[in-house]
Each structure stands twice: as structure tokens, then as C-alpha cells.
Image (cartoon, rainbow, N blue to C red):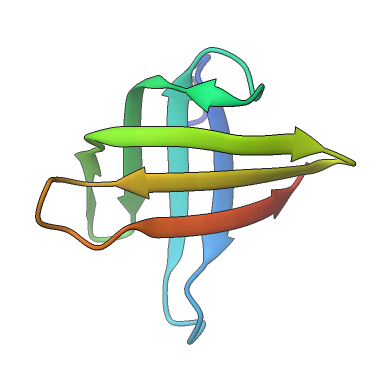
Length: 79
């Protein structure tokens, strides 16, 4: 995971029982990202979409979907 040159952000689930890593190609500027994936200790999946909504004041607002039927994931991450 950490040998990859893709951008990475990590976050804990709301209940604190899991930790996730999101990765994608390109920078952390606002816009759609490619080659995105999400991983945790039980495995991972490629993401259908990953969009950086906003990136300012050392925070990044991320919206993503694993597939067309999945719920939208949302993360606000400090970096």
C-alpha cells in the first residue's frame, strides 16, 4: 500500500471499528479522479467514482461511490 505513488488518505469509521485507505491518481485539487480504490484490513475494491469537492485550508472534501448501487461515501480529511 505505501509503496504506491498514488495519493492516499486514511480515515476511521464513525463507530471506530474499521480504518480505511482511499487512493487515487493525480493531485488533491478539486475535480474527478481516476484509478481510485478503497481498502481496509478485510480487503479492498476499486471505486466507480471519486470526486474532490473542495481542497483548501489543509482540508480535502471527498465524495466517492464503490458502484452504482452503493451508498455515497463522504470524507473530510485534514492533510
